[in-house]
Image 1 (tube, one colour):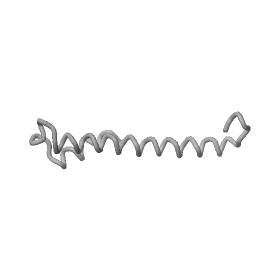
Image 2 (spheres, one colour):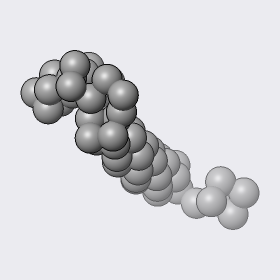
Image 3 (tube, one colour):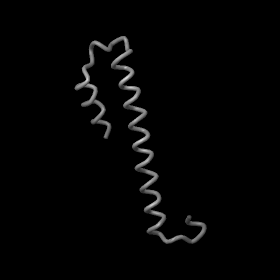
Image 4 (cartoon, one colour):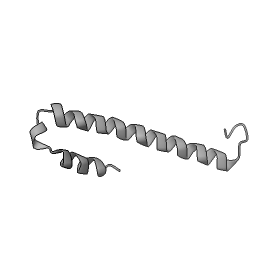
Amino acid sequence: MIESGRDCKDVVTQLAAVSRALDRAGFKIVASGMRQCLTEGSDASLMTQEGLEKLFLTLA
């Protein structure tokens, strides 16, 4: 976009959209892994769903 001479506002808007999409994808990956740990992990009985949610929110 920059090389083709697009307006700076367009470039920043596109970068922000990409950043949000990557954040959402990353959180889904982490959430999936944490959910798996909660249900299948050897220490699954030590972590409650509420505890897992609090841990997940500290990543945001």
